[in-house]
Image (cartoon, rainbow, N blue to C red; front, side, top):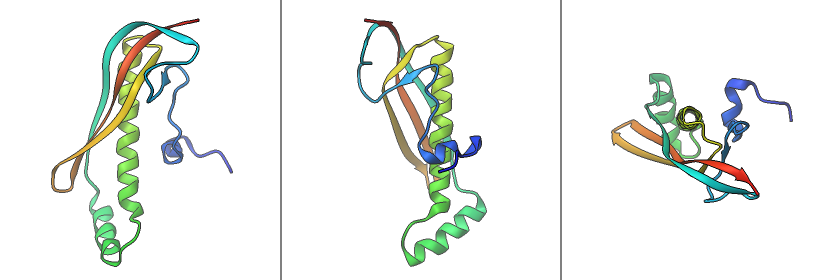
Length: 125
């Protein structure tokens, strides 16, 4: 498989974790948490473009997967993740534990996507 273009990396499930470790768990193997810095988050509000909405409506009539909507969802998750990482970097965190995504439709066709977790500092053991 070839390496994806930088702007398409999120479509392959790869998120940047080089400077800050990110886990859905509550600990980092081989490390001890020395400081809890608080909740970090990224929030994005998205709706499909007119073209995506039209394509999605026509595909929803016949059933099956709707890639145009999946692209909107993936882009929103990625953008929220990047914002969360920036928040953690601003706090000089070493890791984010308990990372989660949440999504809420608060208006028809408009969805909020939230990426959040707890920023911590670590010490190797």
